[in-house]
Amino acid sequence: MKNLLIYFKRVRKELIKLLLIAVFLHFSIEIIFNRFNEIFPGAHYIGQFFSKISIAYVTSFIFYFFVVHIKSEKDKENINEFVGHKVYDIITSAHLLIQPLMKKKDSKAQFSYLSYNELGELMKLFNKYDREAPLQIADNTKANWIEWYAYLKESTQSNIKIIFTRYIHLDTKLINLLTKVENSFFVTQFHLMTDKDAPKELSMYCVQTSAYLKIIQDLEHYAEKNFKNQKNLKSSFYGFEHIWE
Image (cartoon, rainbow, N blue to C red; front, side, top):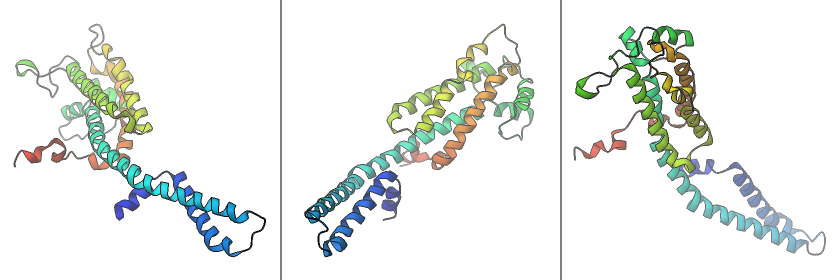
């Protein structure tokens, strides 16, 4: 019963308003107006016409609610679980752009959104060619910061591509945010990071990184509002619970 009330609250407001009007109109005609004489010839038939229209709408609404709307909401819940995990993967990848840098500077540091100046000062401490990123590549060699950034960028692009396969089920706000991520300078200007003639300091990519993290911060606010239940990855989502059976 509780779930039915939740699903009912999610029905489009204009449909609920029409339902209330139809119920009110039907009972007004059948219980109140039918007790009075006709105001003009044919008034009774007009009243019966609107009464039947009201009943037809109520019947259609009940069919829509149980057959179409509830299924759609359940599908949306399942899609949200999948999409929510992917959105948080994108957010985590963005955090990892600077969290390892913060840890290198201070082992107790936790991720936080830095101001542009703070980010610039942090990134200035690192040479983009230094092999100290938290990623192992061939022959157990650590990746450099360019390879680390490329890895996170590709992971994000892959997740967005997967999310967009569910395009018809996505909220327009989420589509807008993911499109901003996809078309951010961090992604579209990544060739600047690999330019051998560019400065070696990681701070040469500070503008793109700072602007990107602002988009990610908006995405995180959206996720906290819409995908909070998917924030902590569940083993059941990946099927881990079957390993021990």
